Amino acid sequence: MRTLTNKRVHFGEFAGPLAHESAIFDWQLIATQELAAASDYPFAAILEDDGIPYAPVVVDASVHRYPEIGDAVNVDATPVAVGESSLDLIYEMTDGDGDPIATIRATHVTIGPDGSALPLPDAARDAYASARVDEDLDPGPEPISEPSTDGGDADPAAVADSASLPSYGTTVSIRSPHVEGAELAYFEEYPRFAGTALEAFVAERGPSVGDMSGEKWPYKLRDWHWEFKAPVPFESELRVDCEVVAVDQEVIRVVHEFSSGGTTNIEGVTEYGCFDRTGEPTTFEEVMLEPFR
Image 1 (cartoon, one colour):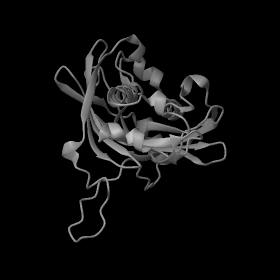
Image 2 (cartoon, rainbow, N blue to C red; image 1 turned 90 degrees about the vertical axis):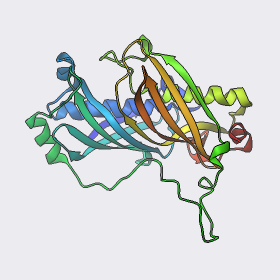
Image 3 (cartoon, one colour; image 1 turned 180 degrees about the horizontal axis):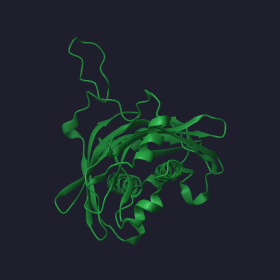
Image 4 (cartoon, rainbow, N blue to C red; image 1 turned 30 degrees about the vertical axis):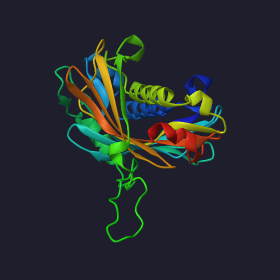
């Protein structure tokens, strides 16, 4: 279903010359709302009953290119699995020419006031089931291959000395600017928190991102797999711990854990890439990799 059509990318959705990663999450959320309304299980009705509508519990995503200002964005949302309470959707984001921007696969559940997953109403389940397709799209980071034992070539990321790679982190107070309608941290904020921690770490060990940015824009989300374990309520102190596990010319792979009050809220793997000023993926310059050596 085409749930977003010719949405123009605006200045407020940008970080530098390209769309911010959080804008992609926002377009996904808009598409989810449109699909939910068309399937007779809208967000508004769930919020009225103090539920958390269509909360993502697993997200796998790949960015093919980042839009520039004025680019058109289209989003098609397609059910690929329908359970008693869960809904798996594939989101295909394309530009005005039909070229791919991003692919996302997300598992959603609606959470009731007591914290349990609510069953999908029969009408909504039937609507999603009738629209379901068999889809083999598998976005997100590829597994890192093991080093070769027969003398052959190995993945450069796989043979990196992970013991010498750094870790870093930050703590964020969850205040009103980070909170959505259910008084929980809004899920598009998590990549912002991770990105802020990464840029602060880089600035401590070398040139800032602003000093590096020219024809290339580094450290933008490229592929990620995040699992949402528990919501983050208003006025929490959220700890963001980041462990760098692989570095090469194409990607910087980071294992993330977001936690509050001794509880793991989110864990996952993120690959950051480098993109040129037109939004196309490119390679990191050596100065961009030095902080991770």
